[in-house]
Image 1 (spheres, rainbow, N blue to C red):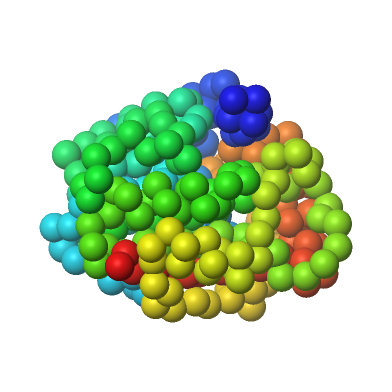
Image 2 (image 1 turned 30 degrees about the vertical axis):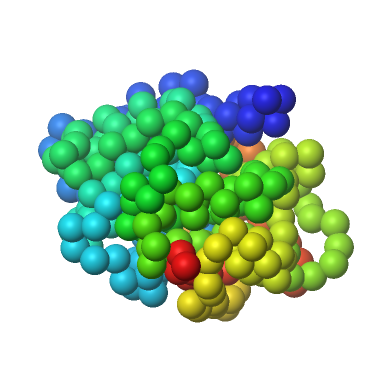
Length: 275
């Protein structure tokens, strides 16, 4: 419970809905007349943003009309992508109650309240019946969860046989101490970065077969180079992930990039099937 409180505290902003509303207005958007794409700078809290989301689900190939679970759904960007791009219905769960409230509000603002819903729940204790989803997604969440075996066993339990589990996490690829803070943790006490081999073993132990795996470090470094170039030209826009990361946003981002460049961590996709 102490870890859960620490993780929720780390992500809680305190006035997130108002901060996003102000940033939307400053960006020339009408908060009461939004399209899902308008939210992309702030609702895709993972390396590569909306482009990474689209790439992950292109690999997963969700079927139109399928029911998906987004584990650690944040502000709901990936869930809304599944609904809009693939015709899925989606339930998102997140430990941070403020994220759940904001995700629910944003879904209503873009006209997707009938396709996506969100609730506060623990990723390691999913409150759903067995075999109740066709697919599940996990985007930059596992780094906060120490027991990957329990996490993946829960995902397997709620998936129907043949269901897809799409994982996009930051994974350990080299030895050495990570620089902190990073977007997912202030220090090592709440950071549980594991190797791709550990993920594969835990997934297979939970009853999944690995269908595909892809190291996205090159994509990540290209993404950050392009981001730095845009910031050099015009600075950070009003609407962005800096809102979520708070006053230490620059340090968190710089440390994460440095950790990737040092060969310690890499964003990695794994597509698994429930057997």
